[in-house]
Image 1 (cartoon, helix red, strand yellow):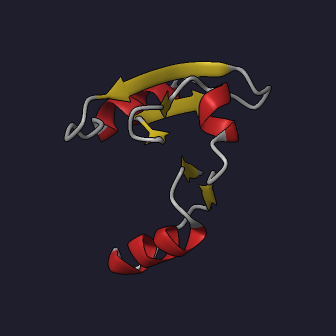
Image 2 (tube, one colour):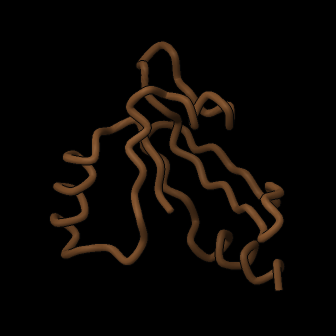
Image 3 (cartoon, helix red, strand yellow):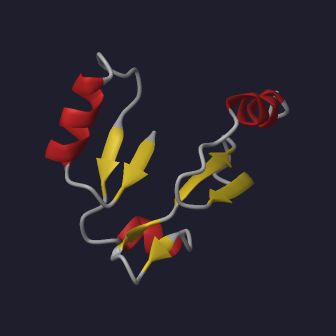
Length: 85
């Protein structure tokens, strides 16, 4: 799932610009989820870009935050997901 402080309308436009996506997007416009995960960026009233992998029991198994303009390494994330078994 993808979560950001953008509205669902913004998410919809972004997904359409990619030709559609296969996962749900949560619009956290009240900043509740991003604050709980410690990824709220108060100076911008937005969230940091990050990847969080949660196992089936709800435990965070991997978290990585990225600087502005830096994209996550998909191979690194896939490796973390594969380790969940």
